[in-house]
Image (cartoon, rainbow, N blue to C red; front, side):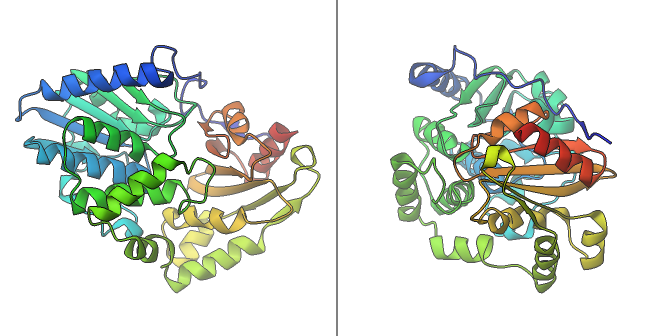
Length: 351
């Protein structure tokens, strides 16, 4: 059986020409600043990041929300689609008092801001509220973003959305205090793989230095986010790695390593699905495979598929072909069917 792929978004298009490149980004930054400065301080502001938020999505959103609070905005709320739960590794992030359940989000805010969402589909049930906002500001760094929203700060050259958020906070005159810096540092560290990935630029390190100077603690972040997991999660990791399969002929001979987890695995160990996110960091180290693929349960016969490349293969092209998106070295999509059919669709797209 062939896997059916959900259309989380329209087929991704290039970032629109009117906002592409430094000149376009500068214009959009000016527009964003003008919109925010023009709002009364009691304006309703809704901040939304993508479903199952990672460190970049959640950290960028909370850091920006705290920045707006510093500017005097009194009605700022933040949320993300169901399942509405912050991963335990991010439980220490400041500013979580901004969070409200998506059902409590304002239906027509004065300003809506989305973070790190490459498609509207990643924003789930909160899209209508963002569409109803007087202005919808998009902060993102995915090359596959089709260009939704009204003001679009989309920089595919940025290693993380937190870089885009920091630029806007700077332009607004926000001071990077310890709480804002902690959020942005977590966002930056997670999306750069602790500063190991290809897009770890000079700007990334400059911002990291500023954040540390403002009070972010790299050792604490590393311990909490990367180096701590319950023993049952270690057992689950062993189960997933035991299923790993290597095909050195796949991806045009570049090699493919795959594995998966099932709903029964999560039930057996009493763990939520988000614990699987870090497992890719181990799977992708396979020397003989340029591409790593991890299939994770996301509902009944529904799967979230993560793809990583060591540099030869553009996995965003694979993800786009299967209805998703992302970056050249990190991408993903959502599929329905059996695990076997999902993996077959990946192999076929890599051929």
